[in-house]
Image 1 (spheres, rainbow, N blue to C red):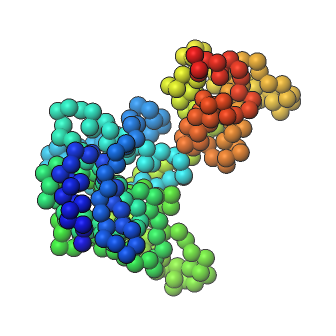
Image 2: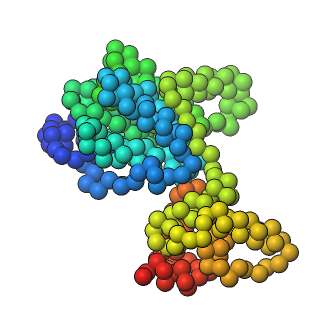
Image 3: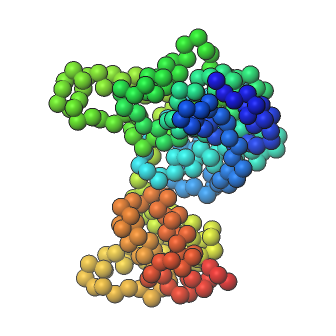
Length: 306
């Protein structure tokens, strides 16, 4: 099924991150990711409990215990994929551990997941299989194939592989309008929903941050990037921001303090994007660093370029 020349070249190579590519009408193949994202758990905030659960699950690879399949669902941009990549990077910066290889795939690769896992089970090194941003219709052939793969059938879970699935849809299956008006179809879809969700040993949910958490993420990313100095404290700035929000109902005055003005701009940006996610915070800081946002104080722009 897989291109044997490509398979041997990539799997025997030194690349730690691979992508399963399945072009229409051609055999699937593994493509080396030459520049994987360098992100670590300490760069993410508000995800510590989920990170610890996934971390302990992956550590089963060190003890001959196949990690439980994990499902992470939640709002777009809340750091589902980033968390998985951060734990993979964290593992590989620990020199006493065997290198953990990452294989990433999307829904187009579902028909080839079972043979891929069987192939990887023959390898000696550990693998993390990330199925990213999945979503199905109950009548999709990929949905049935994926459900059968999770069941396992005659294939035992490999000792050297952990599976993590990310999705923006709670149960991987959107609710259809037709099913809402048809009790029989609604019951069938509910059965499908539970059937696939129940196959995951770990299910984690990521909600959109509230305003205070979003602003805290903006502050931390801005300081990591050099956009803001370390002082004043995060607590003090958030308190000033809360005071401004309370007063802004009565006056349109904008504070002169550049860090608070940055937070005001970040809040306006999130409203324009319709999201307070970590991704929105990162995009805001990236734009501010490049001078591509209006209403960013000059002192902040000069600080980031110095």
